Length: 202
Image (cartoon, rainbow, N blue to C red; front, side, top):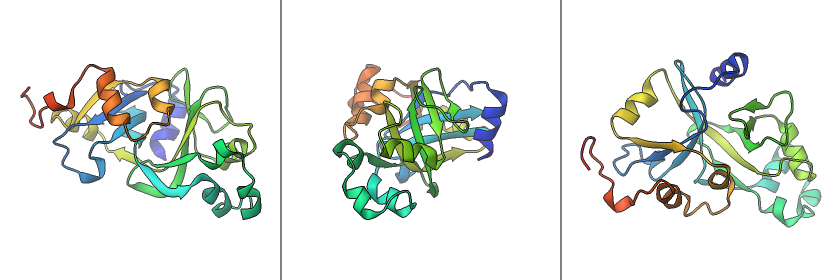
């Protein structure tokens, strides 16, 4: 993906990198209703991020078998924490492509630094590492991503489509996916009942 390649080459950070985007109640696109997106890359050319609070039907062992990393018998014998590793729906774009957001204690050549503590890796090496217990301490995997063209995300934010706040590893990686939207709002002192769907009104 061009944005990620550009980010790696530039080695800089966009002002929305490592931020949460929180969908406002008036979100017009149903695919993003009550979604929280972690922004991986942001620049003048656009933005790319992963929805972190929507799950896929597919489980991690199914994915490993599908990719030929292991057979079904090996997948059955995976330790419980690996077997139960949830695969998220990262967004509507390129749903066949996988991305792993993870703590910085694991890096390969293709890993991209999103922040000092968070990396993004999109190669199968990390899936093999996770399956054998040699992966990062914290990780989440998503299929597909969310993308915006130049200026598009800024316009959506200005039109009250999204709230933004700095991400924390704790809220990013914890496994309480169902309550993540409400908990992230609560972490910045916002009660959903007081949010307005209309721009410029409190």
